Length: 73
Image 1: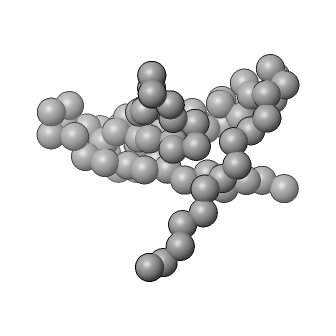
Image 2 (image 1 turned 180 degrees about the horizontal axis):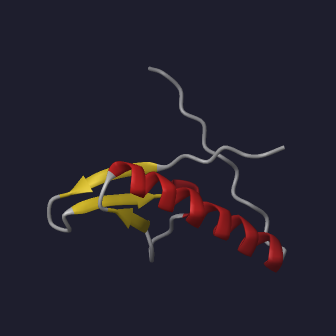
């Protein structure tokens, strides 16, 4: 079964691009994992990075983070 991880995409005026955060994989040393000049590019880059992170965790025998679930208020 494939897990569904959350992806946060925000526009950065300072950087002039969309920054991508993968919250389940973020930590104090690294919050943003990739970026894109367009929203679509940021989504595609996020998917690629997520696939690489999952492969890396599995290759190292590390447990994958549990996907976070959001609830409506």
